[in-house]
Image 1 (cartoon, helix red, strand yellow):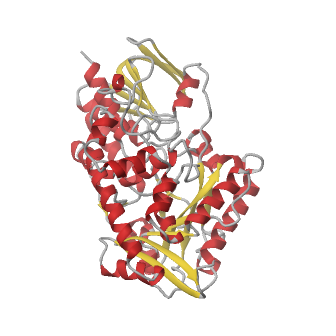
Image 2: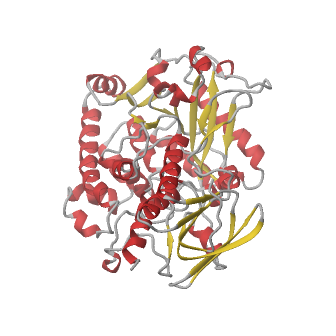
Image 3: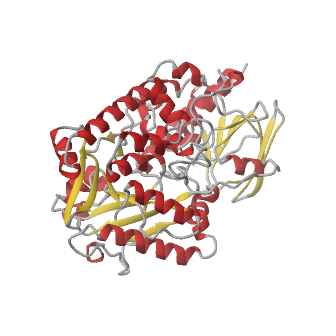
Length: 521
């Protein structure tokens, strides 16, 4: 990385995650001297690829793992050398009913096999017809919202006038559980729809705050399609491409730099950090904070406010081969998309109630996907040849509070319950399919919200840095702003905690850069 030597920069960016790198590439490309300070030994934040298991040549997307919200415009603007592949399957949900083992398969694109799969599960065409109508309406809404994400904020009223008023009322004004219950009858189908509203968001489906509605919306609007794609080379390929773009533009990137304070008065600013050569400070015109809002408050010496609470358990696995399924379906098809485990609507609600009461869910909803089926490049040729595959497991409704008193014990029990849920749909035990590392240990890694906080600095392990916000505003005074502003004109949030932040999108980084360029004389 480039060593910092100047005493003044136009812009200093605190945090070298993907949003900070996007902002740096745009600003340095516009001719502003730009410095990025990253506390870890590498840039990338939570979007990294790492060799997790000793002696095993597999580079897993350790934290974040799929890409949807990253706008194609950012990829083109920054000239990123990046390939995002479509998955052949959207989702697969194993189900046991009436003594039969079935699987609900949703293809991409959907076709006759998807309709037949719905009919085999539900006994008719009504659920698939409702599914098609609902997601057709959501797609229309996504087509209206997505183009606004890289522009100054618009009002909710202006968007409402461009879409189906009934859908707007259902998704934006009433708890998401209501529309799911009104439009779908089957418990499994309801759950497959509902799960996108609680990924990384701890809420019941009837929560009056509507944070579950916002989470659902963000999962469905990426590039106007909502498609979740696989980054070839893993998530690290995304941030490596962004770091390369930032360097090409002239950004100074400094790692192992732990920022200790940020000061800004609206005109001038300064940032202090601890590095390998002790404490350093640099003055600048603008500071962009690619950290959670609570972290920024602490760096400014202000009260941090309510600590975010993450809500997920991430498990990384390397298998020597994919296990057989009780349904008889081809595991290479079933695991190619999102594989839903115990995510019926009723199971999601029960798990939420148990977790809210401080209990590890007795039946643990989770979802799995196999990166290496779409992109085997993350595995060495010998692992590919021998049939090895990766599995990423994302446990739903595992809030930070469950791990507060004994993180290790709660992690072990949570992993046991999640993997037991997966195994209940398998035609063989799971453990013999799990590869072993050079030391003879199972290739299995689990990260609780507290582990994520310790590893990458997300307060409470919250993957969005806090509750997601609507990507528009109702206050007319905010229309035309960028959603990154703070109480000080030359200090901005450029991370997931910005309005329109969240997930690996680069949107907050782009918008913070545009706000600076708009302000700069």
